[in-house]
Image 1 (cartoon, chains in turn brown, purple):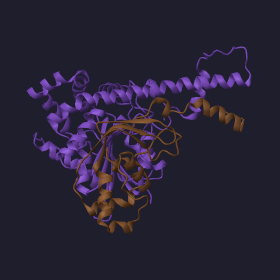
Image 2 (cartoon, helix red, strand yellow):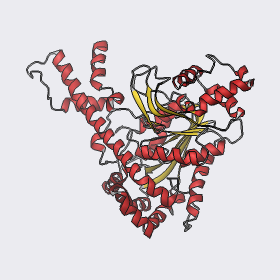
Image 3 (cartoon, chains in turn yellow, blue):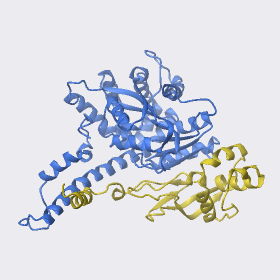
Length: 140
Length: 355
């Protein structure tokens, strides 16, 4: 899983409002060389949550990204190379993605995140809602 | 769901009824009370707890059924994807054919590609460089055939989700082999009913023959709409049953029986009609809703799959693959029967998310 993908994933447990970004726990990562394309980077930049990318790349041991970035920096070759490296060349092979709100752990195996939820994370038991409704509205 | 859909019975339906709130209350009062509180007390607390426990047990049954279905789907595709790819390649969907044509085996791959192109054209997905989709989600991506095709066609990012870890791995491997993995496509194991993406991420939301696996059509469609960006196109190509006539409450018993057998073999929950999908899209205030019956354009497909299964390679692969795959293969004539009886429809339903 490269950080471009990580930048698009969020925790989908019912009721969670702050499920992005997922924290990384790295067990095994690799660096893979990827063809550089300035045009691609410029196009994708507006869609990237920058802070999430910075934090994620730091957990992979790469701390060369600036804390903040704006589109004027896309003219700098040096910046583009760092952006490219963090976004596309750092691959999490084995590890965990952690929901910032609930701490729920989503495993990453062979580079593939497993975002499937368990039963109790999907279905909010109706009984809770019924009781709440009764207390709020005095009706069922 | 029962009030909106005239759903068929399915082997999973005993678990997967999702009644409306009013149905649920009626159901609660008729469930036997089996809790530790003394039955002599009928105070507010006891009543509350009674209803809570009863409702929880029906909710729990539903959840168990969903888990059984999801595992069944994952296992089915874990087991059978390899043999499919071996014989048919990386597109796990119907081909689009000229009507009344006997297609030869070499025509099928181009027919499957044509299916993608015809779907994009039907939905009116823009092709010019400013308006074309830049981020795409492939819901029920299989081994990534559509994802890779769409990513290449539009030069776009594509995320694919599938319940099957084997498929996700294979999809990733194929992308890497084709030089796409690094920038453009990635795959996750995830549930289409709980997509792991924030709202409004994608310009094109693609569901090619995965809708029939979704036990909660309303949730499925809501998620498609949720992850769609303003102005995005949503495309669903899926197996439906025929629309019901105004005088009908449900399908005929023999029709339900046939679909039941198919559900069992392919891990499908209850079917709905294309009209049901249209109603759902309308209820979500989606625009430009279009639907069509493409059954006549896919007619050569199942006979071709059966012929491929009856080759030496097909038979030996089936015998090696496992019981789930074999059961699926044995159910293929049922699909043909369903189409011939005008019961099964191959439907495309598309719409746009308002800006």
